[in-house]
Image 1 (cartoon, rainbow, N blue to C red):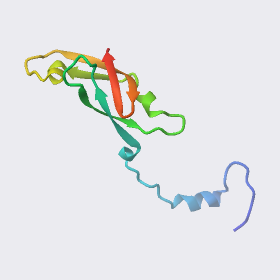
Image 2 (image 1 turned 90 degrees about the vertical axis):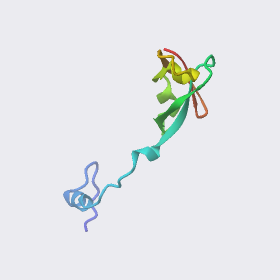
Image 3 (image 1 turned 45 degrees about the vertical axis):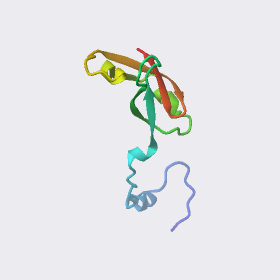
Image 4 (image 1 turned 30 degrees about the vertical axis):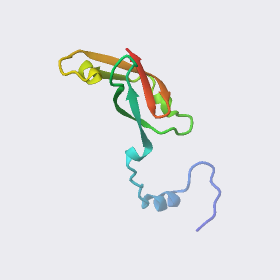
Length: 105
């Protein structure tokens, strides 16, 4: 093979050699973390659920991706009561460790 210095684009024969290579298939969930969503302290049951977020990578911070997310929760789930039918929207405001703290939207 010829050893030619190229500035920005590899020669045609190098591109042909690379064509046979296959991309590795990566499961997208391996790059994500689970966070617990917590309701405001006035409710009996604070654990609302869990949410997924992409891991911190470079300048992308995971906690910034969580802030501002809106969760819709039934009052019955927050008070352990089957009669309550109202729904609340909670917005993520703060991340502490693996917990996402919410407030009313």
